[in-house]
Image (tube, rainbow, N blue to C red):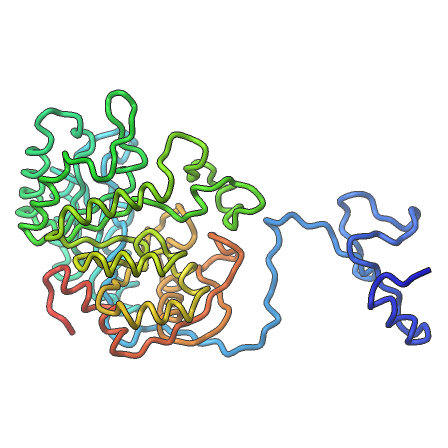
Length: 412
């Protein structure tokens, strides 16, 4: 009988001194020895147990240096956090002017101090009375530590006077203390007209708002598309299968949503039409999986920057291309985490010391093969990342000065 595996051949060549091995994919025990279906095999059998993928948490056998970076090499501005949620009251009622604090500043400040985060930008500050309230709770009560962005009044978009109204609201927000405008992916993926059609990212109704932002020198932080995997089937070929299986409502595949490329093209038309506006294309320009494409966007639009929030899981698995990207665009990459204090959206967004230490390790060391999020199972996909070891000259820009320039603050 032919031997089926190299391990069986080795067993024979050892003169019987090795225990015979079970060939992969075939249970060679007799029926009397076989365990009932689904029963964990005993440690002496050598038979692998059947394990649900979600329970698989392998421990790396690599022996490589590990560095803990508790504090960054220079002060940090976290350009991308969510300290408040707008549009809903604390008891769950919809209200365009309401804003709900996720966590009080008193809980956030100790983490900022331990991790050398000098300022934190709350992108979701809301609008109207809610914006005024958010600014008072954070910016006003803790001067110099927090900056708040306003958001558009999407609920008024179908009003006949919306373009003028929205432009005027941006002016009022700026006078109230707003330091920029945040555009959630509500625009392009959720906002609809009375007939149920999606409102496109480059809809001309918003042009007066973008031009007002340019005139007031308010940066616009925009997010219009999620990772490519969110636009493909949730099947065995999707590398974020587990994430999307847990959150199927995050998928934009198979319904009336625009395709990924259509959203990117609409965004680029918007950037082209408003060259005086200072844009920040969040999450590495919405396309961290394709840095060549992001580079083309940055080369074409010199008035656009990107942030790295919630995308080190993508950046860190392509460390050489990523390092070249940081070298080339070092003055246009902004530090951010997408932190949601005490939030439960995705583990990589949980706010705390561990989150910042992973970001610092990725940017400052050349460590190999480490988790990109403070969670037992990687939340986005089953891979690990590598550090890119940036020099201090680039770190200073990414950590602080690029954001400071956008926000009208002094550099280091």
